[in-house]
Image (cartoon, rainbow, N blue to C red; front, side, top):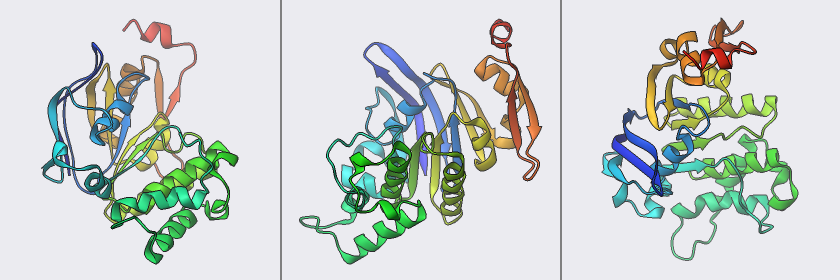
Length: 264
């Protein structure tokens, strides 16, 4: 589905991603983890052509990323950014309908199918009651659910999520990831940049850890979510316990251990 070979990205003279090689198969739900500044957001932006490559190549569905037009790529990939950047008071339903643009012809008039898709996406994200409200007059968590609905309305094959649930309360976080898991089981591929390690371990089948712009660890959640890996990646002592209901590994950080573990 997605293949990167020797991917390099820079901001000026600073190398942010340094020779990444990886593959993501169709239907995977992958967690992209790592400390601040490790390159998670930049990697997602490279996969969506927001940030240009300075070396290597990326292919999506067997086609080089550089060959896609913006509209073509938007029919394959949908993105949810970390922060909302909409200053005009569009209504929330208008924002979600923006996700239908790649599928529209001519002057981009919204069809009945577009409206039905948008409304269903808002229902799924518990944002339907916000449909007529301006996006500038709702809370950050509410706006984030609207942006997730916009991405769902694209009906893309791949969802690129950059801290997509960071602004949500605990109930909505789990609801959104339950939704992502359902969509994943229906065939949608997910790549999720996350700081919430335990949420990643609950839902992601595979974890890719970045550190200093390189892939440090890549493998199944059960194999990579270990005390040794997490302590090394985050340079602080970690203990692993099992979730009492699912059995998934969960991380417990040990207070006051960063200084000593950083010297390892």
